[in-house]
Image (cartoon, rainbow, N blue to C red; front, side, top):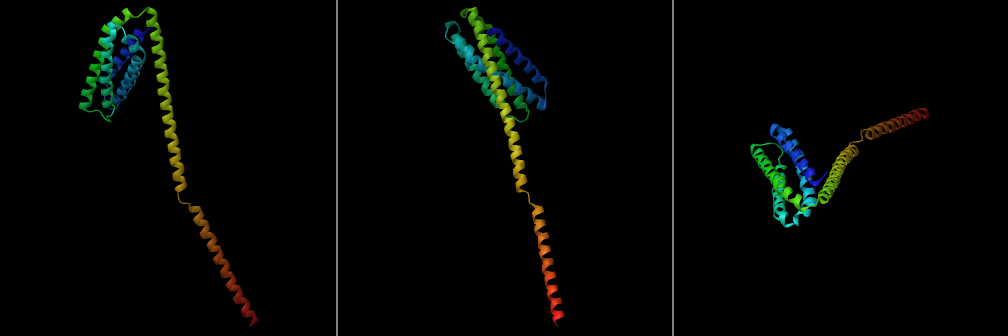
Length: 206
């Protein structure tokens, strides 16, 4: 897949998620937002790592690329603010709408201006190579994210296991106390028998 086709596919995916966000409610809305956040973070990363450096130098695309970097910064700040919420409020929804409008403006400018000019300054081979590099970086980033998720789950399970072990070790050992009482009563019995035995002997002597 060439660079432009890959990036446009990302744009379509995010647009679909924004449509889902509008129709979702409550916790489902936050869940869809998390997907949007994940997609946008991945998309901005591969653009800034692979695509923008390739189109930043040519005069025809220089200014548009710098503007794209700035637009990414605005989107990242909005994502950060929205991700702090634990529930959906009117203010959150308004901010989510601002995010959507910023993303839509960025996509429109990228596809109708930057991509068109970039297709003239880059050769067909360069566009194909960029597509491969974008795909490779995207896969690498996704593997890293999956690995982090797996590690955090393992860590959570280990912490739970450690808590259970600690709780068990702190629990009172009732069996041991019971056995002590039991042995104590046995010795008392022995002493009693010893005393009564002595009394019997004394009476025989008399």
